Length: 139
Length: 232
Image (cartoon, rainbow over all chains, first blue to last red; front, side, top):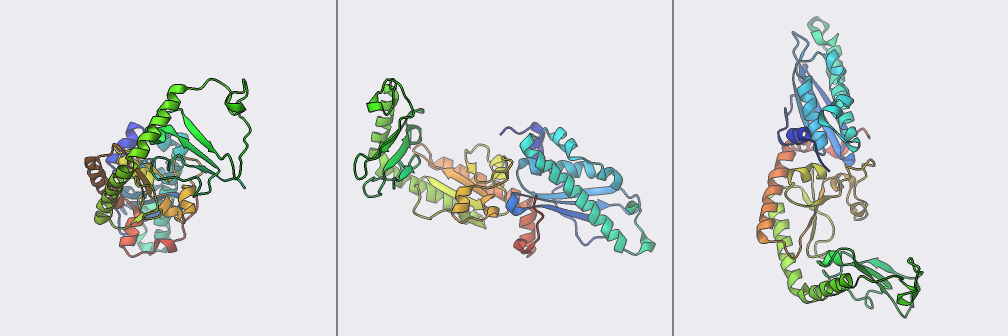
């Protein structure tokens, strides 16, 4: 199968590979997919408590080149965004940016799911946290 | 009961004996044994039992009605010569391929952990090696070793997401089937190519494991089989 130049670029030079401490209150972790389906994406966001902006993002992906590229791209797009803006990232935008063929659309769906899961995890953490130290991004 | 076997992969690689193996019908194809593309042969048992076939090409009734039409003589000769060479070369070629295949297998398994052999260790074609690299997805791995022509049992390109049914039939779980790569070695494979493949595999599997959430979890002592993964 022919991969687009952008998929190849993200596959060969993936952005923001790595992990944050899952226990960190400013970190949200999304883990989606399943090994027996051939795709697992772990995506993490780190939110600046002062500004409510996603200051950094990391990923680790078990999957094909398109799954790796979709998650790498997602971390690039997440940096500097507010939680609301991040919620607005659609899989169709990933499909378009990476020129994913129809059989690879599910990779972009997983990336969107991972973003939403990471945000939800972050928001859940803020609810159980002390209200006096409320973090700006939780809206 | 009539027994047909698709021997396209076996012919010319391992010895076949239709009497000893109880084969009534056997298909071969020239291009799998270094012959021309576009020609194959079907062995049809003549007695004990006699196998009767319905023609799928009608017309002038050539070949006693089995296959009407003009034969591609040059293709038939090509298949014949390919078979002759295969029979002559098989004893030395299978030894050569076995040695290269074991060099490839050991070279990879000595340097990488969590690599599993799919299929039988010895009862297999001399030039065939199928390995699963745990925590790395097969198609993703193929992309990283693009100078090497291999195939994967992972069906990430298909809509079904179902991995190879052959590996499943061999008892390989879905997870490792998605991590499988099949290597084919042949008459023209060289020692240098095997060394190149070992180096590329070790480098790429190591890189992709550093990127794999499953590998990370296993390093942290998490049992990934106990995680409730969401099906998708």
